[in-house]
Image (cartoon, rainbow, N blue to C red):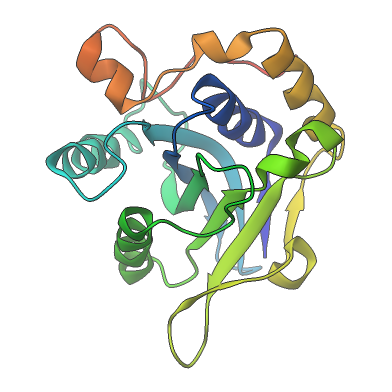
Length: 199
């Protein structure tokens, strides 16, 4: 069972909106409550929009993101990787690209409950949740598409799809940076993206 907080949802949508003609990939991060076997996706770390296949850039981004989760300057509590998000460049594409699948497999080795959400580009303007979850099949371990309800994934604020759509329309995606942006401009705040806030 997982809950997606408004800031995490907003950052995924803004990442997709900033690079609509490219596949974007990022990490879902948050907290785990072992007593209730639940997790909360509180934030994201946008990774890539250019080097989305397995590449040295993807490896470098993951290596830099990992220690940032426990950095008290960036986060008040220790966060963990909970999964991955993907927004494909093609409108109707709801698959997990090969490179993203390899990253997701690596995350699942560390956290068996890891999941992937693919942005349903066709639903972004509908004000409905635009996430398609993938979870690992119990027997095969392959990633299987499911529904939010079946995956027991909820949004903590049902109005966030509307708010995220409005933020994208207002151009707030310009404030969001990923690791590829950081490679071009080392001042880009890709690990925290503090300029991105839910209104």
